[in-house]
Amino acid sequence: MVHNEHNKPKRSSSLLLIIFGAILFMVGPTLFHQNSPELGTLALVSGFILGGIGFYLKYVRGKITR
Image (cartoon, rainbow, N blue to C red; front, side):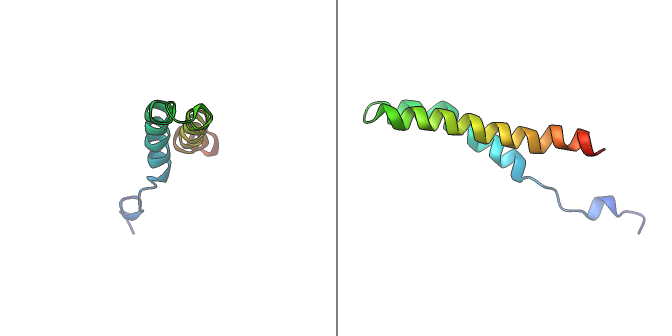
C-alpha cells in the first residue's frame, strides 16, 4: 500500500498520561491539602511521575528507536 503510514492508528496514550499527570500535579495538592497533607504530597509526586512517563513515551523513546 502506498499510504500505509496514514492508516496507522495514532498512539495517544502517552499524551493522555502527560495531560493527566499535569492535572494531577497542579490540582491534586490543593484539593487534598486541607484534609490530609500526605495525600497532597502523594498527588504531587504521582502527577510528576505520570507526566514523566508520558513524556518519555511520547518524545524520548521515539528519538531513540529512530
